[in-house]
Length: 391
Image (cartoon, rainbow, N blue to C red; front, side):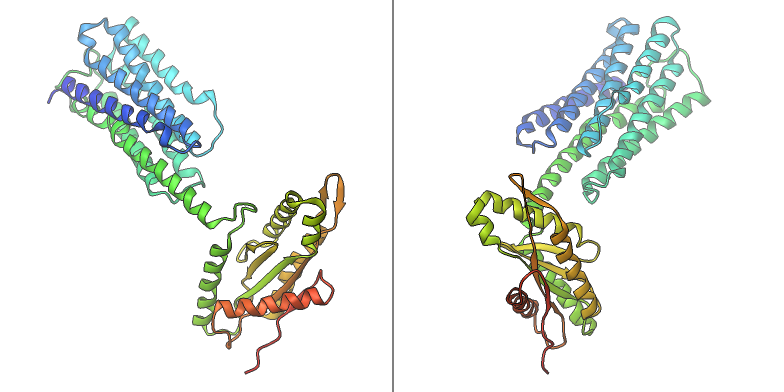
């Protein structure tokens, strides 16, 4: 297969991929649609550039090469912007600088001083910069880092970028002035259409998988999160509690886990006096405060209504009491205003530390629940420890 045939086939595949991505655009989640638009336009620009390269013998060389390489360079810049948008990075016009410099270099060494190797130098440097920066953007972002498709797409960027570097080095070692990309006597010319088309063809598939994995991750996060407070919901906190309880049991230790049941004091009065919307605001305020002071190995989630559950990774009752008291003091100290009036929110906390006699997480939770009733009966705004079990 000669280079022209490879370019034509690559163009056809790119157009198909761009069309599929366009048809699927509305089914993608709104947060990835801007990124998908960039990727689709970049793919279509790749198709246009490949088509012009294949037809360069029938067009004025200086314009066909310049426009073709300009399309390819701009397509790579849009791929880079697509990765930045996907990972939530700020947009900047500077990412189009390599494409502009590359296109101007191609124009000079096509129209004014025709030199094939020089055109390869400009393309290799400009394209490899976009490719490597795209890979770095995908790998450096902490968001969705565990997505396998992100690693695959980053590897494709690196592979194509590495090929462009080798292509440039090859023509540095053996500079050729009179040659075109269609000449089949050079191995890099034969491989270039195949390698470069990996991005708009294979890369588009990886990008679509990345988008679907993002959506699946959002669904999983929504299923595990309380819709009002954004804390882990009852199902999630229960699952984490059971896992922590089982670990404590396997270790044979009499401590290692404490469960705290947190109840907002006089919450019914807030609902009755100010309405349920005010109650929701109060819930979110308390949830935010609890989350800010329950980090590291600890965890807090919403159990339901005005009740929360915290899991403490502690070694004894004293540490558990200290952790619970930190939450109580944080809520008491956090200013809360409603309709211009400052309200005093407090919580009652009941804490149970795992003991050898606990048979399950539910048993431990019931002990903490009894302790929170004791805290409320004792005057509220306090921490009560569950009584030690009798053996």
